[in-house]
Image (tube, rainbow, N blue to C red):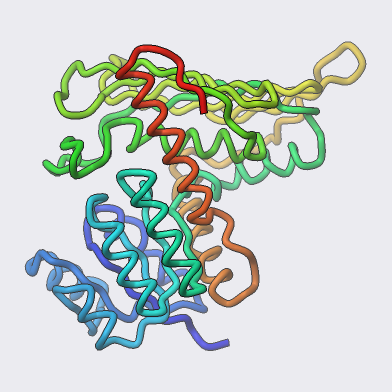
Length: 333
């Protein structure tokens, strides 16, 4: 099988630490070209990863290189325009989360992907962690019965120190857009995408002005499923804290720490595997699995497992969270 030729637009932290190094581990894909507006960064990173085709403008890359698919890892405010350009140029696209700043921007991207019949994937890498994939299979096989309650959270420093990151007009939001969208997507995926009935959220601005640095929310599904979520850049904790617990009618499971309990008659049996990868290894594997999945989708070997349509719906929930926090009451969807 010929290697899929891929270009990367945006050479910031996630591209340097994750996407570019992973190409060395993928035999059926080739990093062919890169695009970056910062010229010094463009030259330095291109040299480091031995990329010959390098461009200061993504449209030049689309026109002059031989890329078949594109990874977009630029600031959020640029996602919509760059994605539309790539899709109209006939390229399949993997776009880093958040897909866009708003639901309307996300919808524009999805509509253009459908019009051009291109594959559109969003970088929800938590779905591709080996432990969460195992838990999804447990749910599919009814090991814990009907899941009805998810308790989840992520408390850590903000993912970027770039100035645009805490300007709402450029980022689309604060910790909800940074961390909340990830863990909410994971919770909804594990619950098999229940239709949402209402959202209630309380946001805090302890160290930021334009965007929230802490958010606590409750998301209710029409099937009675409930998600309680807390995300923060500012809560005073000793170390980064990421957790997710799912409770079903026949058992429960959690990650960080990884635990599986199943109810048998009147007792709960611990089904936790004896060996589980540490969080750092799981994170690295998630991004590698994500890239493999994208290549597989391009080659028609598997569907797009985190498609644009789902991320578009996540944006609708996120906008309801912001509305709830602003109006200080529950928002019906």
